[in-house]
Length: 396
Image 1 (spheres, rainbow, N blue to C red):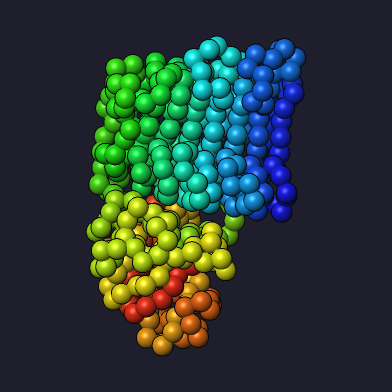
Image 2 (cartoon, rainbow, N blue to C red; image 1 turned 60 degrees about the horizontal axis):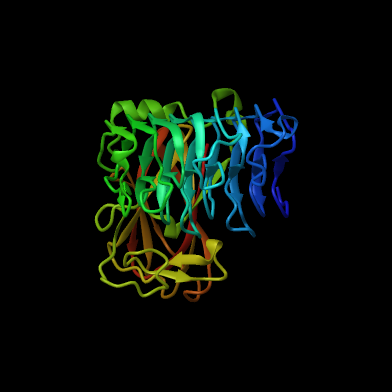
């Protein structure tokens, strides 16, 4: 924690190493970087290969270098990225590959499986929760739970030249596109298999100026479900993601969600906002009022709330019991409130104090909220005008 560059770098011949049970937080650049991006076909003695990155918790990285993925892999071979939890990122969650090319390279036989990645792409665009580049034979993206990508483009983003990937049994919730198979610039993503994934959005980027992804890839049986209505098969996949039981103790006692990272889906799904314009700084392409706020986390806050407007969020709950919610808010007048709804049911209301103005923030708490383990859709329903910077949920 509190490092000014990357957290851990393995390069120049690092082989058969394991990174397990570690916590990475508040880091200026990426948490973990494997391999380099300069030598597509290095001397085998210098190839980075056989690295296992298992059961780690990564959050709050890319604090100064916003274009830093949580885990970045260049030209590497035979790596396993499994059972990690990766949250609160300005850019991509896991990035694999380099080169924008169909040319053979050292990159092959890489596995990204059973990870839980959420609340990424909070500052930049043109990335994803999992992002790939170039030809990578016998590589796979399988059994991951990916949710709450804020900005464009795709939760699973197979960019230029991505080839020979198997993308199966993933669950995607709240993303601008659930998948992109790059169809607009040569070389397009091709020769991939995308099958048996579950998503709550039908938005995808498959067709472009070069044709449609179905022309060059196998793309079949990817069921659509309604937001929050996970089918049993999807819940089974979700339950198997993230830290394995032996490593639950490294998970931080609380998680923070930025107010402006509300769910996708539009009016009535991700939000209700009764003024059909954005009076803020157009942080997102809708009319929720998001304001620039240099004194706020992520430099933004949601404001200009009206009675019965609300914002929805997907919340990971890893342990059943009573949880404490804390909100960083600014108000004036002393007539504002927030009601917390969990899966459509009220779980309590909180009268907000007069903080002295909409640029003066204070912490307020709603304690003792009972939550089952699992993924919940929570709504914050507003009364009166306030500014909300973020909220924090503390587990038992």
